[in-house]
Image (cartoon, rainbow, N blue to C red; front, side, top):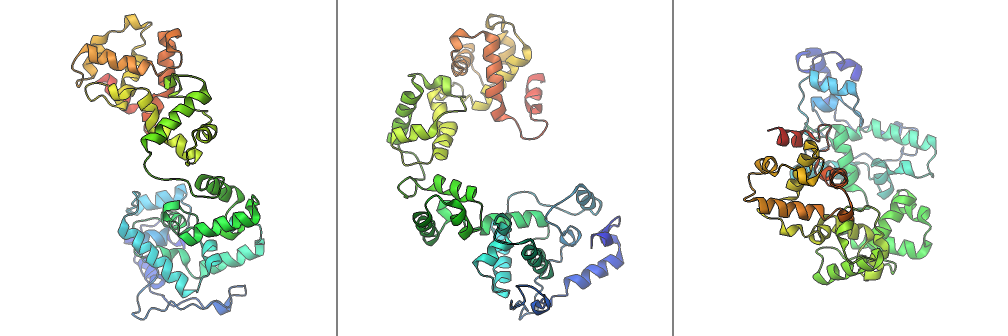
Length: 393
């Protein structure tokens, strides 16, 4: 199909337009009985009573039919002026996708294992031979699974649609989204098999690592779910007390940017029913800024303002703190009302550097540039561009 479209303008070629129309409105279900495979007994029941087309007629989907998009595919999209939406799926789009998924699974009477295989999780399990996979792939292609999922989502790529489906319809979701039956099944399987994660993984069609990681992030050693939601003041206090004991210090400011903190040991000592991942995230996103006392930053100074100040000082390359021209720096921050406020904010930032009293000004700036600044860079290649503009203006 791709050869038909290659090097042609999709919307201007009448023969291609006719070709597409013939494909789109051929809504007859695939006769599974002609497939010489384990799927020869499937019962396709997706002939719609209202003669509604179940297959996407979007030019984007008929042009790019694969789950993987190559550089050539991007060029085809550009050459044909096709609109591609990249933002997060809306509620309406998720609803359309679920309707397509449910309709397909109903038409072919898909059981749980079949659904998991459709989502690609069968590839991680060793129970299927190469021939099994080839037969299944032929079945998926002949039933136009991807085009059926894409129906009603004309500006989303097949790749985007498929990967959203994998996330939305997989059995192992976040605890808040999982049914009580699924949670009980995981606990029962762990009671039965212990830490034989390959056995448990087969039941959910996922790798041993995936099910092990999920279990340890969701259940404590007694098999009970971890607490979720907002942290209580008592939990925060116990966590900080445990951190001081484990790290053997009364001043946690020097660990604001430390990466290798033993969170598992800390949470056990604090007797907090939270996963190590949740503890690490809570420290990273909230507690460390409280420890650094950045709530005392003046003139509505933000964390990003801290990063801007560090970049300014790094760019101006002063040799010593006594050489800093604070008049120039203050001009960059119109929200600062006084030099005292600016200097106070700088002192709070500086104190987050481990053993800052014994370090030179250059060492302090280099540390902050390497550890504070990256948290506020854009993920693209021009991550520093915003900071460069801020300094140069």
